[in-house]
Image (cartoon, rainbow, N blue to C red; front, side):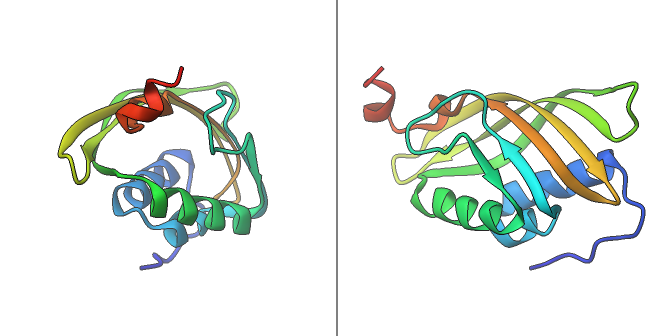
Length: 144
C-alpha cells in the first residue's frame, strides 16, 4: 500500500514512515520515500548485500529481493535515540529492529544506526549501519 507523501515532511516524519515500511516489509512504500537519485549506503559489508543502492528503483528492487529471500519478520522497532544535527536535513537514529526468524520461530534483534538526509520531503542519502548478522540464519553466522 503506497502512502501519500505530505508536503514539507521533515526527517522525523520520514523516519516514522520508513519504520512502518520496514515493519510492513513493503519495498514499494520504502522506495517511495526516496528521491529518484537518492543513495542508500551499507558501510558494513554483509554477504549478499551490495554496498549501496543508487536511486529509488534500486532501493525498490534491492529491498524486494532482500525481503523476499529473508527469513526475518520484523515485529517492532525499538528506538534508542534520535539525534538532531546542526543540519536541519539530517538526523542520526539509534534503533533495534526485533522480530522472528521463520519458520524456526527464533527471535532476532538487529541493532543499528541510521544517518538520514531528507530534502523536499524525500530521502536523498541514507547511511545504514546495521548488524545484519543478527538476523541471519545460524548457518550464515557460523561462516565468519
